[in-house]
Image (cartoon, rainbow, N blue to C red):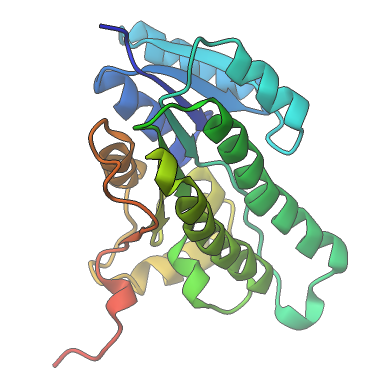
Length: 242
């Protein structure tokens, strides 16, 4: 039986790295994709030292030629996880057009291109998992991020509708606040304030999010499609406790 092949973008660190490790442990051959060559090589070396089957592919996810080259280097695509993304903090009235465009370019175009190219190569039973965010529901000081992640959720549903006749499933995982290098780039007091807002009083770990992604990327789950799975400890439920 052929070993299933999964591709993971943003795999040099954070949720992407945790997902690459989890999928490799689940029996996939994993192609770890990231634009940061040095960090990617170091992360893949750690996974290889654990006996996991992982390859590195240095890819700018906003450049179609890079994505095509990485996918065509493998015999097929069974699962694509679009985990790459950026975040930065800015108040609405201070946001610049360049900052807004960059956020949309990386978070939306950088999801669309790998997903589209993967779908072109998938057979029935293929799975695409995007990574959106609980932030898509709204928030302060990151309107551009909110807009980009809401777009990812809409894109996921649209792709699922077009690909369902081919039996390719497309779903999204929407993490709540997660302890990653991206969130740690915020000032320490901001990270602490965010963490205190979580129902459990602490951020999720990347492994928690990777578990949800791995479920949707697993063979035999293609009957689930067009869904967004919030993995946020219940914060998206809202309401007041007594």
